[in-house]
Image (cartoon, rainbow, N blue to C red):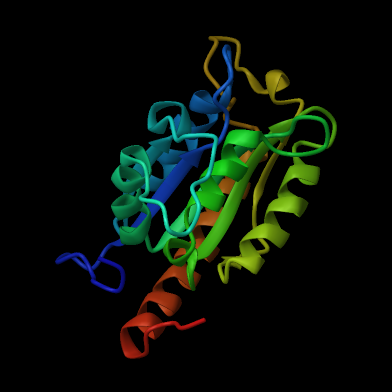
Length: 199
């Protein structure tokens, strides 16, 4: 439950794969970022793939029951102390299934930090990140300054086919983003325990 600390004191990080399209690169990016996060002794990682979550596109009205798939995902978001959203940039924005997933929930985002791992062409996903910062702020989440941006991500393959290559700047960006994200996650978790967040 939100506000409860794992017995070992670790923070719960939910990594969300935003793209659901065929041939997507999102799982490759998410697996890389998740592997780096799992090396840290202070994090427990939950990888959430929106393609597998398969949330309905049509939102219900306030007096209607929530669909089962929405209810199934809710406890995982509630349990998270922090979020990392892995998103491509489509037409200067982010994928529609991500917006739908965000809008299905409300309290689950409150008083929790969010970072972004974005990929795209020359912008590296910065347009998508800029819009997402505004949306998560409206949901009372804390969109931290540090993010990972991957312009022309296809150029980061190593000669052996692995991704990303060891010299890619995204490796340092990921470390910095995780450092800052865990600082905010711990501070906000302690704050929620002392006083539940209310809107």
